[in-house]
Amino acid sequence: MKPTMTKFPSVDCQYQSMALDEFNGHCSTGSTSTYWRFSRDYFNAEAKTHFAGEAAVFATIMLTAAVPLVSGALAVLQLCRASGAL
Image 1: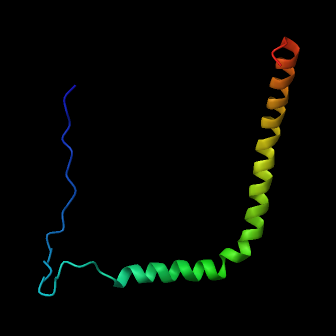
Image 2 (image 1 turned 90 degrees about the vertical axis):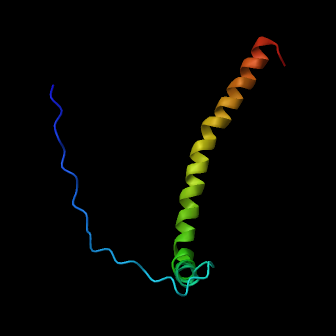
């Protein structure tokens, strides 16, 4: 089978370099505060309203997962008692 040639994607050659006159090596602080403010606003406003529903769903899932575990533990205890191990 003969290999086929693939065409490379076009490249934008209008790149303009940025001047580094005011570069000092320190981290930028402008963008991180925006994310912190956004998350703080979300948790102050919307997270409280959804907490009760999410807690109820979490409790239901935990109870659903606990029932087979308890049942399995009781079955192992019965097996141990029947075999004379306990």
